[in-house]
Image 1 (cartoon, rainbow, N blue to C red):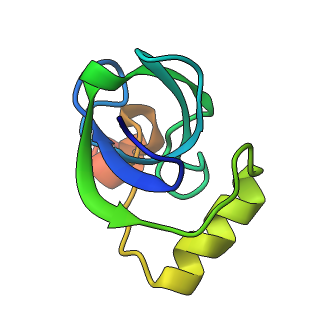
Image 2: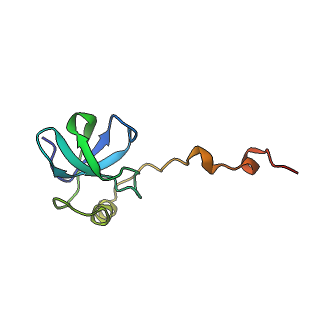
Image 3: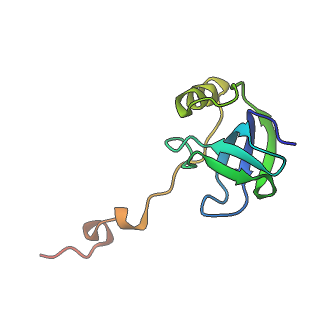
Length: 101
């Protein structure tokens, strides 16, 4: 069973490959996770434990902690977070060299 405060990597879904923190245990198959979104891009949501890979790291958060509390705990621990990727629409035509004259 995955404990509250466990740092995991999502292995399935739109947030695949991103790190998250377990906030609450819903039942034997599901947990509540968060990134938080401003840090890793993972929204607070229910996740199947089969779709999570524990990293072996754990942070000190209480059950049901807010995203701000989780972000502070990650910062306190010095947790390295992967940088968020820019969306494809973020690059303008001028950056690509297709600017109109």
